[in-house]
Length: 86
Length: 86
Image 1 (cartoon, rainbow over the protein chains, first blue to last red):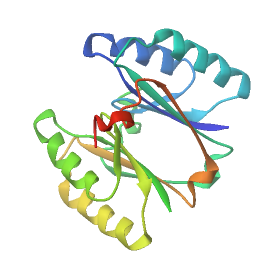
Image 2 (spheres, rainbow over the protein chains, first blue to last red; image 1 turned 180 degrees about the horizontal axis):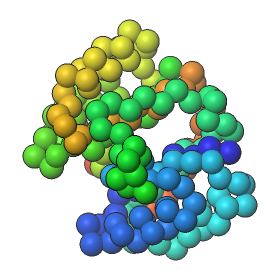
Image 3 (spheres, rainbow over the protein chains, first blue to last red; image 1 turned 90 degrees about the vertical axis):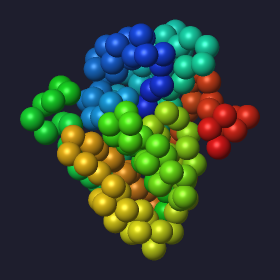
Image 4 (cartoon, rainbow over the protein chains, first blue to last red; image 1 turned 120 degrees about the vertical axis):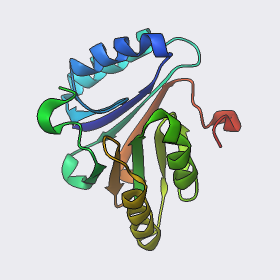
């Protein structure tokens, strides 16, 4: 399974989403994660996101059966190159 | 065609990505757009993104042939409800 996860947390709490996301996915842009994930890990991630969020915060997880269904284009700086984010 | 577009621009320029994105897609989270788009409009959007970006900025566009391939879950606040963003 392939997922894209985007998050919008209060500025002083984004490090929590970063820490959580990095355990399962690759950080590809400021508030965006992506990657292959097992059904089991995805279920765990979903529960942890539920526990993490406070009012006015949001996370969206987009799930696809495979990334072959996805055409991904990066414009400008590709943060995953040179591991700026990793 | 269904696309998800995420952007990371310098803080004083994010309004430019917002303005561009809103012409084609729905603003669903802080730096995230989504929506159905024609091939022609997508080509135009891609060119406009190319023109917009400055060094150290990035946009990622994820394209899918249809949003039926996508399972989308919103955790916490759904910004598109009550048109907080629209």
